[in-house]
Length: 171
Image (cartoon, rainbow, N blue to C red):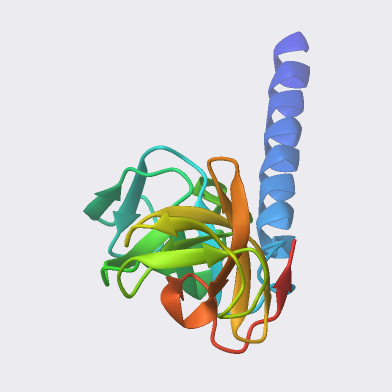
């Protein structure tokens, strides 16, 4: 009698767990996908990020990005996976937990001058080399407010990579 009860309990418990798993899968929705637009910029949230050919662990790794805080563009979403594009044109899929909503930009178009105010004739703050990554605080019109190593100021939007052309952004 005990064997029959134990077997019945195991079967019922197992079916219940299986149904809970099916129910959880059927009701799963990507919590970020419906709310956030595509394309958009994010940053790498980990020191090492494997970029894959498809949205899943079974897909091969095409490139490994090793720069936490590097800005990347999200161009597509599928469940918890994001298809990203970096400044060099490397493209592939990463799991959303490896990305951060923090914003950053890469200085582009040669050496740039960070200015005190968003005006061409404003006082220079610091000279930034091409390729430098800076934290993005705000973009409005043709200028973006950034900071790096204790310096803060404005650079022309056309001279950074990591912001959409008409995006208004404020952290």
